[in-house]
Image: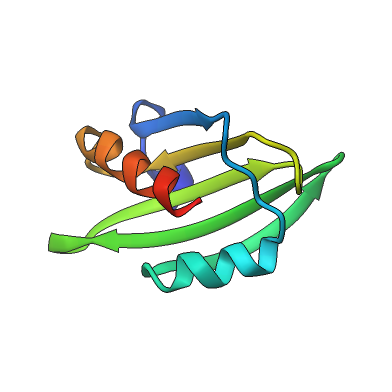
Amino acid sequence: TWKSLPDTHEIVKDFANAVINSVDATLDKLATSNMFFIAKRRNANQEVIYLSAKLSHNIPFLIELTTTVSVPGVKCAIKTPNPELAPFFFEAMESLL
């Protein structure tokens, strides 16, 4: 699905002050906000987490979080058919992290 959306619909934001101390605890917390775990992988010393979410009116968001556990800084990349909603999504994601 990620590749089916044009690159212009990918938006990236860095949350400089966000810290993920536990990937599993973060996944549990995001699940309570209807963000669903797809996969995770390790890239060098970083964890990359893939999630999906749907907002009202069935607007899908594909989410990629990249972080080094217990170190400040989380990169959040999203793809959605409605990129104009990205600022609202990022505001919510930052408060959850």
